[in-house]
Length: 441
Ligand code: GDP
Ligand code: MG
Image (cartoon, rainbow, N blue to C red; front, side, top):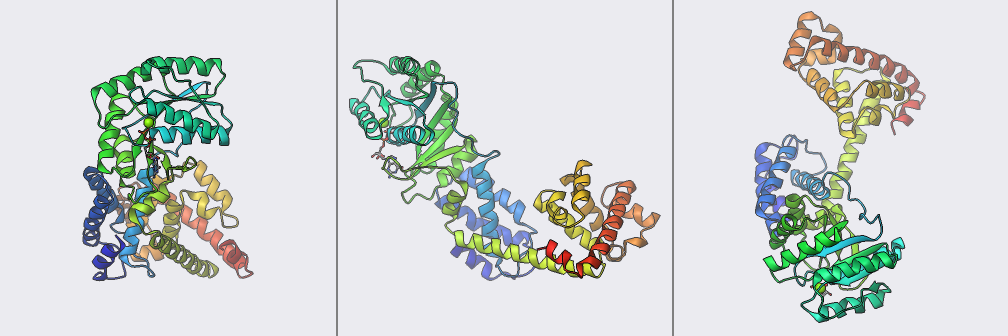
């Protein structure tokens, strides 16, 4: 992807903001790259649209190329989609014995993952775990789980010939209750393809066990197909999370993005090998890096952004020391606050401003208000921004109307500017002694 984007952007200017045309060209390449990484078409399409919206208008930093900046934006968006709304939570294994149902196609790695997870729960979290194989089709599969259980020192439900999956599930439940286990894991039989028989059986087991977690095990190398499998299982059985196996292979991880985007279910773990300890918690950043295959560019842009911010801060500090603080300075502050997620972020770091920031936040100073204030400043003329004192009634009406707001909103902004300007002047004087300098580091 980096090569592709590099090519696209060589022809572009290196300064200014990303234009719609720049981004469109790059996004065609990003889309191809996503498809090559096995991301499904509709997901790739939505994703590209989201990135496009975010990227247009972003300032291109001096020290990076537009292409590198786009890669960073793509990377951040990937992480956002992969992580979903909330942070991945721990497995729900309260109310012992907590049933965990393992589902998926044959050969996806269910049995291996069952043992890996059992080992993790027992060794790391000190849980008493019971594993049961519900694979009635293949006696070897039951043996396989029993052998793994012996290896890791986790109990398995004794094998009884001729039982149905539902009967085994019932027996596992009562054994887990009687035996005082914290968790019992049900390793279901898979099929090569999704079929009714399999789904009926899994549904029946689900109804008996009422699992706290239903984990879908998917081969990370299957790419596009993974999405169909995930959708089917989600519709018919309902899943609480996904485990992606074979991520030690050369698959690019696009399945992770597709499954996350389409099912909305969190990816909980990734299988990183055949060995019993090769199970890792899912980390969006790692998979995002893998889909893009260019972690170094991302960190380069991050560094460049940090430098720019430091330079800006330095420039502002020099102005404050001279007692200068006009609407352009205020706008930069407001934008910074938006970026850092609130008043406290920036002002809180400056001496004397912490209290004000707190008061502003208490007064409901949220993102919406920050955006309104930026809009007000944007609707001022250059002259008004440099000299807000010249704002009289007619100018105020024009500026407020331009931002789609009321004059009272503008008055509030002007008052805040006056207060901040006074504080800055005082700080500026102190700053000569080095205090402000230190505060801004
Ligand atoms: P099941 O049919 O879903 O129960 O699949 P198995 O657990 O029996 O696994 C099928 C094969 O995949 C076995 O040879 C496993 O060792 C292998 N396997 C499972 N997980 C991983 C993984 O994360 N990486 C690799 N390389 N192989 C795995
Ligand atoms: Mg199996």
